Length: 108
Length: 115
Image (cartoon, rainbow over all chains, first blue to last red; front, side, top):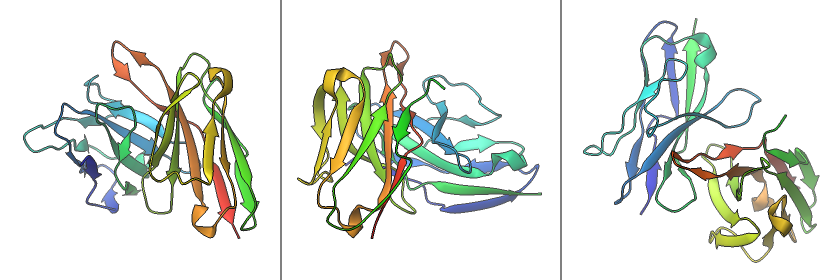
């Protein structure tokens, strides 16, 4: 079965501290993985995708096929990073499979 | 704003009534998706169109739900005989496949409350 697991529903860190949001997936094929972010009162928007291997707003994510993980990391959290983060899998077919999401709160 | 738009943004209805939502995708995108999101959950896939053809429907989509995309442009999602369990955020997304893969862009959603 295709599944995405985000084990932390809530994550709270202090400004300037490192952040890691965990994501594990279950899929037998070659996955396309994404991180979407939803800021307060805004629509869901793409943060990054593993194919592009780029850093957006200081965030990076590395696909680890051995551990079937796609954790999102940022070395120094900023208050504007507070948001809901969703990991999503595009398992060959067209529909995205989302995790439950992690609410990240950055404390001043 | 050239992004995905949805109308209405909010809908309150009584159980048993019919409701219809509209989605206008990004103009050059040939793929259009509907997702449903309930409190505390990530979005769940409902159905998908490529141009005007509805190619896949989730088993979440009961017979009371119907979606159309006439002429491959905007799409409508209708829920007949609404139930309280239909209360959710209904999200629309559009995409096109490029050499770099596919990225789905989401609309703001329609929040449905069934009383």
